[in-house]
Length: 171
Image (tube, rainbow, N blue to C red):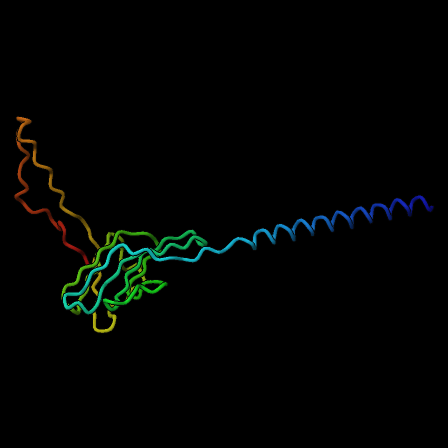
């Protein structure tokens, strides 16, 4: 009977050693992954538009967050001499990378133009004394290039008739 007990003790010791080895491996793996320095999100400015009176500026930017694998699009209205703070836009945020343009209509009115649907964005209609208007660009008029004068070909017809909704933003 002692031989049977000895074999069971031997198996139990082998199992304990195996489990200890597994725990050591897991612990080592966790230490390696915790050594990875987290990459902070960062803002990259794409444009700055100064208001007509020079008191404010509208900044469009992309926010890159490597840990979440995301790029978002933002607009902030800040004082002219102020730096863009780290964080999301204070007037507009879109959950992906979209084309965007801003234009001051007056000292207190800012227009935000995009091909994306502004209704799907996080946005506000007023920042301080600045009211913000959002427009979805539907279509743009493309004018064909003029033919080369030396080619001898017939010139393309001039675009004399306006294209419906060409260049007009939709609210």
